[in-house]
Image (cartoon, rainbow, N blue to C red; front, side, top):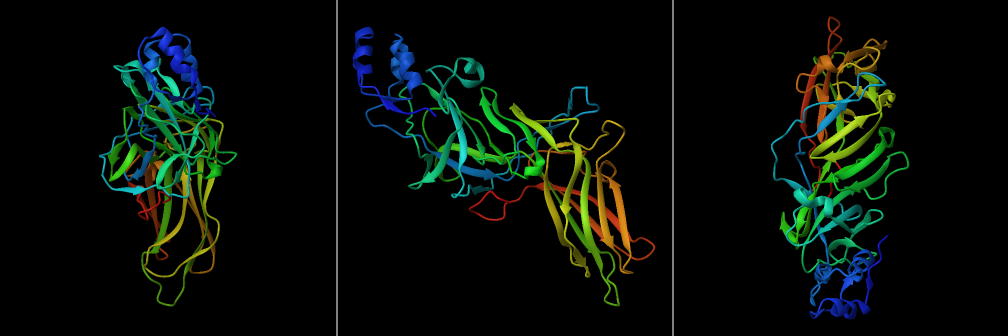
Length: 380
């Protein structure tokens, strides 16, 4: 971690080489070292006498930025990236859970420089060696271990992810000048990984959604799948159907994420496997639609995998005659609304159990925004 220190001798050193008055400054050691090497221009990095601490305004928007899911056809070929699907932004948001923490970085550019054009010249300002932990304290989102102040001149560009502490098998997160990256994420962790929109070229706190600070708008990097079930026609004798298991098969279970203009996932082609949506039994006895199970999945295409296989959904159930049944369908065939799992989208499959001439009906796929449940949390 970069420790913030007070360099009392820096003022005298700067005055010797740059004959202008200087205030005592508070800077990360990296900047102090650079300035002591003799750059008069770097001396403008001192903060004003009235120091403004960097804090964040943290929200989650409902609709994701357009992203892409990479697909792979063989173990040796490079994954072909699908064209990004862009969705119309909405303004509804939810505050970040104040019990959570997230990781953040910031890069500094001198006055007159802009991120898109000059980011190669950027210098680490927050999170120089690893992500800085940002938590809610005293009514603000900020680092609780160090104090960071807005520089007197120049701008800061911010990047963030959530949650700060990832499970052991959820991969390794880092941040370069292209943005946040996550290496070797395994979906078995079921960690809801979120990435904030880059906030570039900032010189002071802003007001966003009624909150003041660095605008930090988190979006889900994964996809979510839910299976719902109902009866097409209610049984007259009180019989029922019991779902005993639901799995998604032939999905990529490990992948790496990077942010390069849009979010992109690249799967490990050797990681094909299955995911369980529902392991316990669920009775379906009325026409009411029941949520049977949900699961996070890695964004990916529904296209053909190596060996000619496609992603599948399998339903195991006990029918109204108390006989065990299994029904399997191709996700690509069912995909009336989309042909891939995209970042930040919620995919719903509704299953109807009917009469003997059509015992199970796969009603196709619906796709919607990953909708918030409450006003104070981004956990959906």
